[in-house]
Length: 155
Ligand SMILES: [Fe+2]
Ligand SMILES: [Fe+2]
View (cartoon, rainbow, N blue to C red):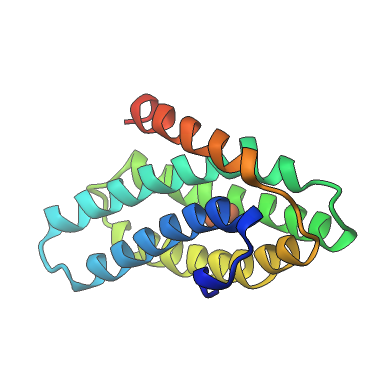
């Protein structure tokens, strides 16, 4: 999705979420490009932290703000909720045993899974949010404040 084409009422909130998406996708690539085992572990744990903060923001603030906007949005939110749960299970497995033999496999599956979720969020959910003209100005502010808190709390 092209950030410059997002209407003003949604630009800040969707733009902030898209920035998070870009940041983790960069880290997925960095993990692949890194040979050193300790480097892979620290990237994996950093990604798990970023994803946990991002998913919490969406679940606490963003998704509830969209509930009921349209039937299609409600279906996409149900799907997103299930996808978040699967991602959380993978994150928990990585955080439980970052030094384990399955790090490479678990992180690769997490990368593929989250990349798919990001495509759906930006390609379907965000598109519908713009179509339904959901006003997200207050949501953007609330998410920004909460993000700072979570970065500290979950660090
Ligand atoms: Fe999400
Ligand atoms: Fe997201």
